[in-house]
Image (cartoon, rainbow over all chains, first blue to last red; front, side, top):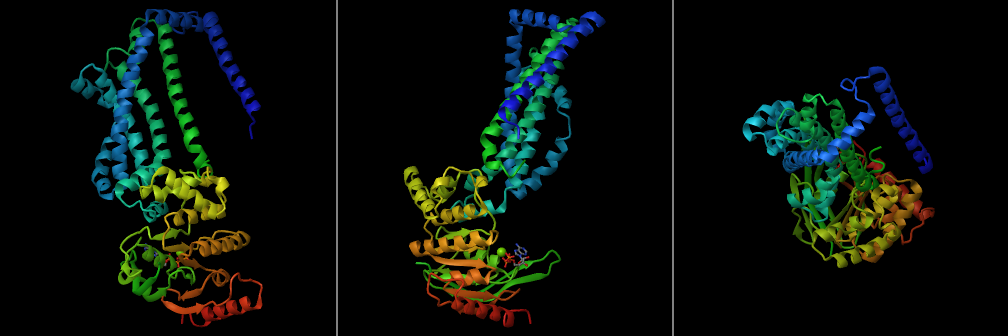
Amino acid sequence: MANPLRKHKDRWFGALAIVLALALWECYAALVVKNSFLLPAPLDVTSAFLELLQKGILLQDFQVSMIHFAIGLGLALVVGIPVGIAIGWNRKINAFLDPLIELLRPIPPLAWIPFAIIWFGLTTISAGFVIFVGAVFPILINTYTGFRSVPRVFVEAGKMLGCTKNRDLIRYIAFPSALPSVVSGIRVATGVAWMCLVAAELFGVSNSGLGKNLWFYYNLHRMDCVVVYMILLGLIGLVIDMVFRYIIDRYFLKWQTGEVA
Amino acid sequence: MGKLQIHDLSQSFTRDDGSELTVLDHLNIEVQDKEFVCILGSSGCGKTTLLRLIAGLDTARSGTILLDGEEMKGPSSKVGFVFQEYSLFPWRSVIDNVVFGLEMKGIGKDERYRIAERYLELVNLTQFRANYPAELSGGMRQRVAVARALALDPVLLLMDEPFGALDAQTRNMLQIELLEIWEKTKKTIIFITHSVDEAVFLSDRIIVLTPRPGCLCHIVPINLPRPRDRTSTEFAQVRRHVLDLINQKCSIQ
Ligand SMILES: Nc1ncnc2c1ncn2[C@@H]1O[C@H](COP(=O)(O)OP(=O)(O)OP(=O)(O)O)[C@@H](O)[C@H]1O
Ligand SMILES: [Mg+2]
């Protein structure tokens, strides 16, 4: 297996690829394209970044976008997990809600944008709503699957040990057993939410934010600024995903070895 | 106390095509307090079905099950169960598995960990208290499952082929350990097995079930003194006797 030293070396090797790509990009933009509208060079982008940072726009956009993201994901958690538990645990509720969920699920979240604007106006709620629609289904479906696949023997072992009420069985047996599935659902949801965030802001569902200003600077033909926003969106998405990977490794791997992988 | 009386117990399942599958047919068994009974029978004869009924995990079609004169309705903390398959909660460490039943009972934190440590010591796994089940061998997992079931101090311990998935050597070791635990805690134990050898080694009495529908075929008291020696001639004689009974009387006519 890979030893830590080797892993370290691999990382440097990977960083080299990024540096090479940057250099290639710089050369190509400065020597071949020679048009910072068609392809802004990394140096242009860096100065655009500093300019935007100085204006204080970036920080504000970041804050607004994170609020949108938090509203959308928070709402998706508050709705997705309880509904997922209900349909995963209770056959009757599942039979009742399943057709409705299956009808709503294939509607792309962005198709809700017109109604988001009509219902909530150009507000943070409106952007949050579009993100919610994108994030809720992965959470709901994974919670449901997690609960469906709780081994019967765990539930029965719980019953033999005095855990007999439905509420306790869900809390002490089914939920912990389903948790890895729930968390991986949330991880997928954050990815979807991030995409919906850009689209929602871009289509004007809100009047500031990273996606919104990406579009704003496109209209000003400031493509160097557009690239700044692209990179920021990518990096923030990466950080969010890394946080999740850390949580999964830290809390679930130790009891899951042998079951997955 | 832990006296179990089973009267006229029948169980059947409805198959997908609508026909009835009779698994247990008017079974009568009585198990004395502090007795170690093995139930022997071929695969599919209804051993697990019987044990689940005693545990209150399923409801019988007819018949009664009395524990110390009281009818069993649903799972009770007076009855402990060790499952045929691995049943430890993988998200809880070894000690937290053993503590589970006490936690459900609402016993205070210090107290319940103190009790759990004692039972972990009983199965000689104290040094693995902080490990997760995925990090244990099959035999260790079943020992933790035994400790977990015992922690609630049940009067009756039901064991469904707990050592069935283990190699012969581990199995022999755990049998000796189980007998020691039984001597110390003096529970009534009903132990299911396929293995005649295991049944003769462990039990005061062997109950042999017929192939489906399972009904009582024979009761064999084992009067060998403990500790028993598997290689002795007396042991071999008893084993042969039980095997003969299974072959002659209990096979399908
Ligand atoms: N819930 C159920 N629904 C339908 N049939 C069942 C059900 N549970 C058990 N059976 C059937 O009852 C019969 C007895 O099953 P049981 O699990 O009690 O056997 P067993 O003696 O424990 O076998 P083994 O030694 O292989 O564990 C089997 O034929 C099985 O298919
Ligand atoms: Mg069985």
